[in-house]
Every structure is written in C-alpha cells, then in structure tokens.
Image (cartoon, rainbow, N blue to C red):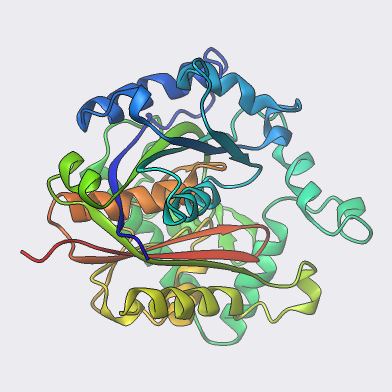
Length: 358
C-alpha cells in the first residue's frame, strides 16, 4: 500500500437556496482557495473526480458545468460518481494506490435547495416496483428506523434532542459561514413531528455548498502539508436495497466497512479520538456508534455534522475533510470519517485517518 494523505480541504458557505450561481460559480472559489493554501498549481493535479446528482439539478450530465471551474484544457484525467462525493474520494484513493499519479482533487457539489420538491426527487433511489410508486416523503423511512430504535431501547427522544443541541452548539463555535441559525432554547424538544419520533430539528436541513479535498502520495504529501492526514484504511459496503427486508436497528454494511478499514489501517474505531459521522437524522448517531464500535470518549461530529447543514452529495466528503482538518490542526491523532448513501443507512463508507506522531 502506498502512503496517501489528505493535504487540503475546504467548503463553501452553507446557503439555503442558491439560484444565482451555477455549479462552476459555487465550486471555483473553494477550489482556488484550497489549492492556493497548499501551493499546488492546477497543472500539477494528476486526477480529478467528483460527485453530484443530476436528479437534484433536474438535467442530465449537469456536473459537466463544474468542469469550467476545474479547467478541462489542456485535457485532464477526470471521473465522476452519481452519488455522494465520498465515493469519488474512494475512487481517487484507489487511483493513487495503483500508482497512476501523485496528486488528486476530489470535489462534491450539493444543491439540495435547488429542487422545488425533494419528496418528488428522493424516492427515485428506492425500489422502482414497490416503493417508488408510493412516493414516500423523504423522511418517512427514517422515521420508521427511528421508531424501531426507540422501541428496541437503543435511544429515546430525550437522547435525540441531546444530540441535536450538542451539534448546534459545536457548529456555532466553529462555523460562521452559514445562513442557518441554531434553534432557540427548548425549541428542539417541542418542535412539530416530521415523522414520529423525529421532530423538525432531528432532520438535517438541505443546503447548497461545494466541498474540495486534495489527496497526495508520499513525499509529495509531506511537501504540501505540515501535518498530512494519512488515509490508513478505507472500505465501503452495501446492505439490501429494500428496507422491508432489513433489520433497521442495525447497519451490517457499516460494521463490515469499519472492520475491513481496520484491517488495512492496523487500528480500529475503538482507537480513534474523533469521528465525523454522516448522520442525516439524529437517530443515526447512536446506531452508528454501536455498529462502528466507537469508544465512549470519542468526540462525535465536533464540526456540528450534517444536522446543522446537509449539502446533498457533498455531505459525506465534508465528513472526510473535517476529520482530516482536525488532524491538520493538531486536534486529533487518529480519526474516523463515515459517509452514507441511500435510505436508512443502506450504503456505508468508513475511512480511518492518522497524523504523524508528535
């Protein structure tokens, strides 16, 4: 295995609805700043890959617009995934492991606020024969999973409110570039139900934003970053597509991903000091903590996490970037980043990061 590290990360402000900038307009300032911070000229980027979602854009091959920000001439080596950009990150990591180059740029553009009605968009990823025709609203299946966890005694509404309040408190201390405001005292516990037991703030708010992560190998990484975040292990798995055939109180694919990533890394989730989890709903945190085997002293989503802003198809990549950023700043020595795609934690990706010894 080659030594591959995250050497740069950044994301644009979280905007509730951006109808003035196209994809390139949202991405360009972030890409410029991230590459500028690590002094990496664009002509020294060996591979570019991205994640976005044509259904949210309402047109096919929409991501092509973003290449205006990347610069596609002279010709570049480029790829794309039609899902969360965390999977584009995995592709870039594998590409560098094969020895094809020394640097890679990964970006995701989430424009969840662009859709007039997300409830008409999200069901397209469900079973096309039985579930999609029913058009369940985007939070319905999450509500079923949350209810199953409450009934199983894994969590309760008090615990969910505690997670939401902590997330907003952490985000308020860290982030100023967001149009979203924290709930008022007591509002989390009394807000209307969206899908019982989930209240309004238990559901991550969709926002528009772009995120960029830069990967580099070996000595190149050491030159570009004072303290690289080394990707020691990464893996992703998928559970059954039909949620009715799954035990919604567990996430086997998350557990298997964590186990395989630990085999590659030489350390597991129980040995990290920080975890950035792709929790689009508050109930997913206690489920993932249990499935991943995180210790009780691990800091969960110190960035605030998705409950304080979810840019569709960039949320998972931001979790990886935030975990790497904590290592860059010396706030963490070993960190876990998690991303998910699909309904009720159907697909899961786990990445284990480590900083050089201090």
